[in-house]
Length: 194
Ligand code: GTP
Ligand code: MG
Image 1 (cartoon, rainbow, N blue to C red):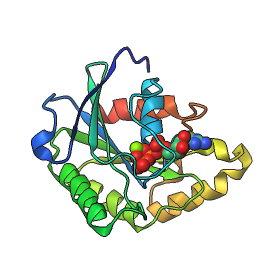
Image 2: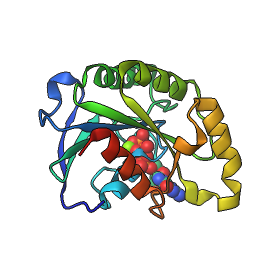
Image 3: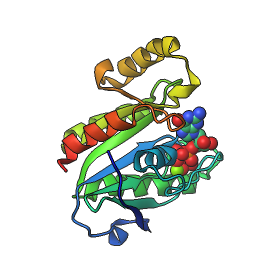
Image 4: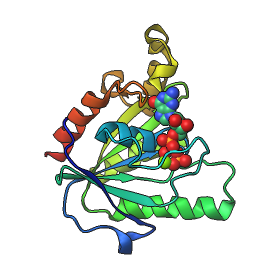
């Protein structure tokens, strides 16, 4: 997809701060440091729209971006950041849950996992929760550039088995090479209907 405009709208910690664009929305969820913000930047072809960092726990609020004046992307704080205090982790969990439960514009959640790491209970719970809420989960295995093409099938099978998402429905992605970008946009356009 050709991205003609991509703007940061605002950050919010709770529903009182969410933007009121009325556009269909996709959110990006996953473990801390898995590459959520990098994936968003690759999708919109902007290097620094969403702030990225090699230190986990970088995104601490829900950050909203408007793309082509047609769709909103929401970058969520990562879960499972071991070094955060229990209090801080609870605050993030509440923030993400409040968003997922209350955001009416939300149509799709892109669940991002590292291709080298099978999904855990958090990802399984999230798939189940979203399915129950009528929000379509899209499973993405990122950092695919870390593995040669022939070494991908085994971990992808494991991701499929652990998550319950069919292999053919998993998008293999790399923010380094741009692999999977077009496929992910095609999925999102289909679900968000824009
Ligand atoms: P938090 O906001 O802390 O939860 O992290 P995040 O999930 O937004 O991750 P972020 O995009 O900040 O990336 C974390 C690290 O992974 C950075 O050092 C990135 O350069 C690296 N990274 C992200 N995507 C890829 C990828 O596709 N390939 C490779 N090789 N590295 C990646
Ligand atoms: Mg981030």
